[in-house]
Length: 306
Image (cartoon, rainbow, N blue to C red; front, side):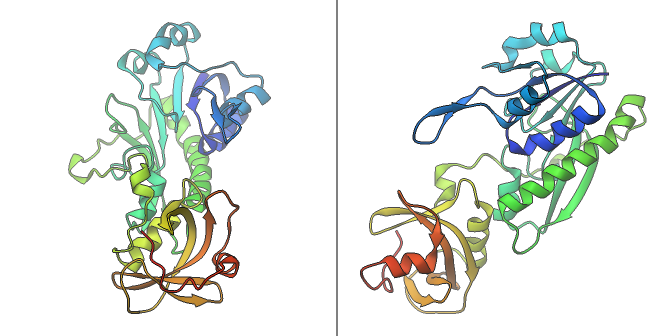
């Protein structure tokens, strides 16, 4: 069976690795290489790197719909996508005889979209998981084949949940593929009345609103850790905030720094206090919040985040 794999970021790598060990992956399709960091050095995607290491043909179309002829030439028996980043047009969906299968990091129909892991934490979900599904024209709207649930722990971050779900995705796909090939798999339509969305994170989404509750602020910070990172503005400078803990009741106005602790400093929110424990000032390395306080040349208490 000839497998074509489409994926781009680190999340996709364990899934591709599992496929390479068990099936004939004849082609990998990934997003275009992009410049990274301040130096603007162009770096290949993690999925492309995996393809190169395994001597697998890889191509990177700017627009997938322009690659229909190439995909027809390869004539894969099945196309498997995982965090690829483009929606497959109907002209491609109809090519493989076993269909186009997607590995999605949520329990569909919950959290359709490009950032389901971030939103599962930010939006206060108790559980999430991975869905193996048939692809359709709409975004993450196809029939569900199989799912695996996982509890979201109170100390989970986007990074820790990302790593758990990528491994779950690999094994769930490998467990599900035999039934897809022999035609014995389940196929369940999504309940449109239960749909929620996990759209890509915008710059506006990253900014902390200290007028919200302790739980909401705590979830935002851990839901954006370690990428892209929540942020606020202090003394006119952007500060990325990576970790926190829930504090006690306190007085003051929302956004005001209330007290210095051994592990950080408190900030007033609508229902009490959130204690910032690690952060990254603009142009500097990530550091503990207490080191940040120690490096200040003035008392931080009473300052207010914008």
